[in-house]
Image (cartoon, rainbow, N blue to C red; front, side, top):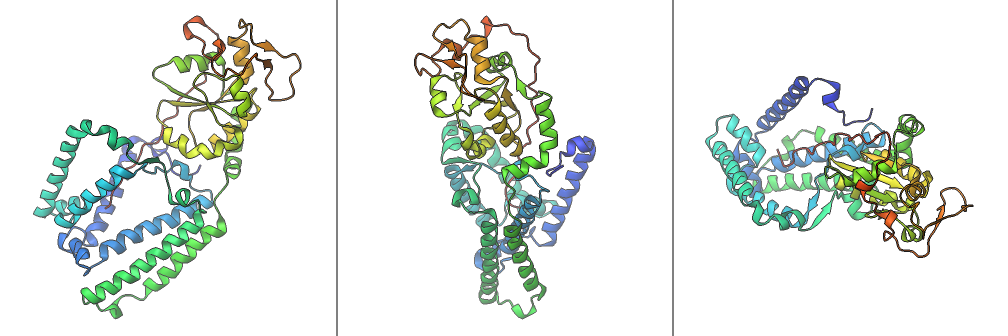
Length: 411
């Protein structure tokens, strides 16, 4: 089983909470041991005298980054299951400015203020109280700028490799080299402004730097698994689900699911655009099979506990291939329309005289009906009324519990 591990299903809830508690205690202990409960030490970085905060935080970031993508390359970790905070440029820039100014003035960020408060520092206590008041004020006023806050510069799940369109390994090596340069520059600033004697610094940090670069380069060598390679790792389970018809849902169940106000149904029609324009289910999105991998980040951004993705092609061939892509990329609640568009029309369009069944279709995954015009979803069968149809079927949609986002911010 690839990580992240679903702790709640592997151990009991009390044990899960105990694990979380121990991690939190260890994190707080390390922060306090590094002096991060002292506002003077934290503020010294803004005077270029003590750059411990930059080195510790950036060191933790690049170390975690390298280990994460080595694990991804080895197939231990499924990166698509790791929560990546959506990018909101507008509110993100404003929030960063507010937090940055607060950090400079108060000498703490939210996490370090809790460490200071826990060690009975008065300035830490007042900083935490200020944070709580700010949270309350935001909650009470957010309604007045909700539209801007949720839409300004929204870019979804965006990573640096996606942004630059570069291989993950190259980006990791680049960031590691940038970090090492920043560490060197930080020490020079400490030498100049903080009168720090670099001769007394431990020599092992140079070996650590070489080791970090070596591990980063290994990510290029190992590579990042392709969608096909990801599916190969889960093929035994997923192929069995396909063979047992566990993920092919009846047109009647799709119609009922679309009408269900508690569900958000996303129908992905993977046929060529010409066939989609001839006829498609009302509300469906045309995403040809060759483009299905391109929309994976968008589908991750759309995920919610009540979202169901249904793949549709003329029969089931192309839809099944698209379903494999979604399964490999860990998109939950994905299903295939049983019998495809052909069965949908046979079920809901049998009384629509303009639609004529073709006796000899062109081949597999071919449309078995002809139309007088390319009307798309303007045929009656494209948008049947649920209350007019009572179809017998075995329900197969079972919502998977979506992973929750983790907390963000600095220590």
